[in-house]
Image (cartoon, rainbow, N blue to C red; front, side):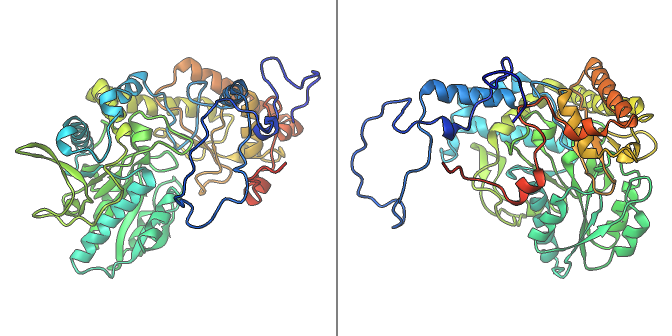
Length: 496
């Protein structure tokens, strides 16, 4: 608990309250409900309830105040700069949110007859068109629920293509060291073995090492571009040619698409499939587990294997295809219904309001802001690689050497300064990594203030103030937690 000299434990408007279970009083209720009628139907599969559900008994004001206070303790993009690298935590225009709440779009049911939801099908179809236009790809699977789901979808299409050609013996997937952790996990879920590809000293894929691992049993390469070090893979054309040369496919992780939208069409790079995080690139509140959406674009070679459902134009209007058609061999379904529709609405509103020039400017500004941070900090915080970056700037802990201060200590000190920390210890190829993605949303004034804080903390670290860093954060409702213990032995149930 935070130390304070007030009688209540509160600090001004920052109220210190017990757990919601500790505030409850048995028999108290915030709402009156009629007694339920007796129910004979066994809804618990023969397992009767043996005790109370364990919910706290609260009055309405208690419940409202509790959740309002929780919201005030949370950090979000609407309260401050969110420099979380590799996650694109950018401002979401309120226009997109307003459109997603329109009754004709928000009140639909996935089991409605198709003739009653032609507008919704048009949203899906139009968004699919623009995603294909922005990537240069001929097909897109709209139903994947988020990034890793999109990875799995792309790999399943690759697997179906190989098996259709009688090449089911291709069981290896190559993944660079700097890849997101979901990449090897997705490959393993598809039944593949995973082999790692090292990076060169400049942070990019070692092409020679890649070529040495290529062979007739390789199914695909999974590569992120720009990669997780915030760098564009400058040899990507040669990489694609090498992969295709052994009959394998080229999967690209589209998590960092926000850096290149409107600047390059990924089809021109030789990519066969890529998922697109609509929640990162095309305006949806991001974080806390959702919502997300991961449409997956497919090359001509993989398009026939796209999963169902998908929307087509027919004589009677727009039609939702649920099975195989002439020339198609869908590998199956990846989701119960038609995708994350609310995210589709937001993404389409964003794309149409921005236009091609606006999308190009957004990605350009994201790269500009990251390079501005890199230029203003690299003399005091050790940059991991020479030269400019793309949408995120990567630093490491060499500037903390012999100070007794760790990457975690430095990040915790940022919390006392009013900032959510940058990504720590990722990518794993860089020791003590500090990964910062400012996005295109932030003004120069916001970046300058953040730069001043980071420079100030770096100066303190050089003077040996390790004790202060170890104690941070000191000004938050809770102090430093034992995060390792909490992860290994979490307490998930309150007991009186």
